[in-house]
Amino acid sequence: SALLALVLLYVFNRLLTRPLVRMVYALTDFDPNSPQSIHLDVPPTHEKDELGLWARSVNRLLAAIRENLSRRAEAETRASWLEHFDTLTGLANRTLLLANTTHAIASAGPELQLAILIVDIREFRDVNAQFGTELGDEVLCEVAHRLNYIGAGGSSLLARLAEDAFAFLMTGAEVRERAESLSKKLQLAFEAPLMLGTNKLALGVDIGIAVYPDDADNAD
Image 1: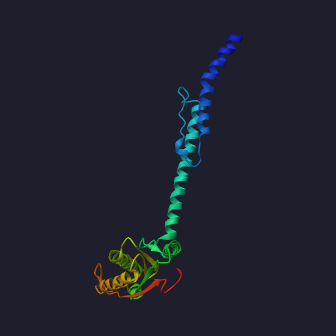
Image 2 (image 1 turned 90 degrees about the horizontal axis):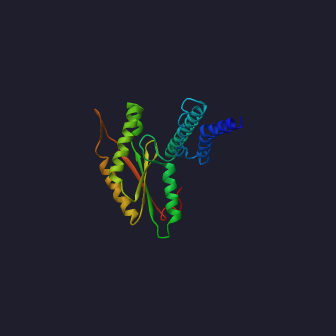
Image 3 (image 1 turned 30 degrees about the vertical axis):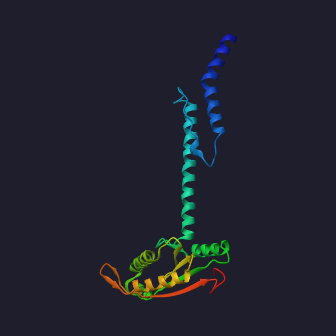
């Protein structure tokens, strides 16, 4: 009987205890923030018993954690994007423009100059009232594209401030001269009407320029 007990103990240890201990040790390295690093292999000969069921259940739990973390990361990324960008045009929004302006002023030396060029779209509200918001949204996207095409550059940021208002943040050398030059280009560009389908829309622009520190001493 003692020999039989030893044999049973050996079999029990080999077939159940050892595989269970290996799986438990595998889980000791589990990082809740990185569950993809863990996967429990179902021990051979245990595919259909309780040990195999336990291993598969743990793997399903890990997969659910991975999916949850992935969705949370996507949601956080989306929330961060919505906080700083305009959903219609994809441009930076007022929050991001103000943050970049504040950072530029705080991190630069006394020789820093930066310019804010504000572009108001005339007649836009008339377009909205006459043709509806769907076409109005198309107009805003086309305006954003035209502004970006004309004024894009490594030292400038284009943002949408309000329904029909946009702004360029310009940094670097000779910002007043560059802002005035851009203003002239924009005025000229908007002399040409926007063509959206069969609609020919004439939209003018009103442009204002403020230069730091000559015209203002803070981002607001």
